[in-house]
Amino acid sequence: MTQKKDVLRETDAEAVRLARTLIRKARHAVIATLDPATGGPIATRVGLSTDHDGTPVILVSALSAHTPALLADPRCSLLAGETGKGDPLAHPRVTVFARAREIARDTAEHARIEWRYISHQPKAKLYAGLGDFRFFRLEPTGASLNGGFGKAYQLTVEDLLTGNPANDELAAAEKSAVEHMNADHANAISLYARFFAKAPAGNWRMTGIDADGFDIADGDDVQRIWFPAPLTSAGDMHKSLVRMAGEARAGLAAAGETV
Image 1 (cartoon, rainbow, N blue to C red):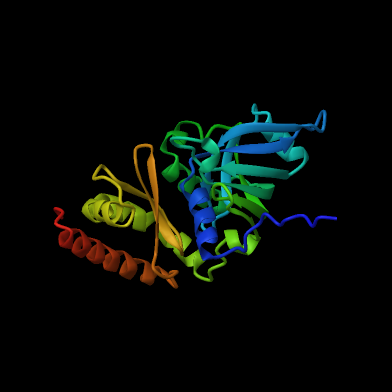
Image 2: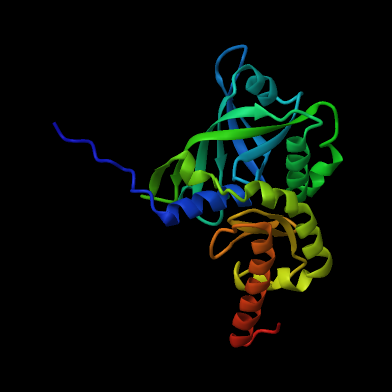
């Protein structure tokens, strides 16, 4: 009997970084749930953000088919990843296997998640406060990464999430830090975009900071920028951002670009 070839590659740092980037950058994804009436699968599109540790977060209406499905059975999966030119199957995507947990209103957790979600999804401000909308954390149990043809990986929860001891401290400092950067350091954010993300100049703003990196956006263009090393405290956040701005300025200048 011919032995079946294992199509999975050994998970490495590059695969982990790719999977985390796909989830952090995504503003929408496809969620698969189980219809409580028939038990059959449902696949629908949802808006997407993440919590500080990288857990996917969705905001959904009670009128959506997936909401009663999640309340009846929290098992679900989430497919994230953008297509581009050429064969859509050649572009990377990640499927997260998860259990949904509703976030209770009028809690510190809800306030934190609501701010992060709206920062990442500004248009959601129009409906996030409506009574029939609710947040769910899609808490991963594992994931499958397809980085393109012949690049398949099976990922663990530890591969996807950041269990950094500084997460709570950074979460408490995030809102003021992001607002400060957007109000007073737009030039630094532009430097990050141009040097680290290789993005064109534009009206970039910061949308969130976590222990591993930060997210920036210019309209519908979202970029993820990773810190050279994970943050260890809120104070480390400021030092890292200042250091990276200097590195970007020097790098762009050395390349002959205007800074």
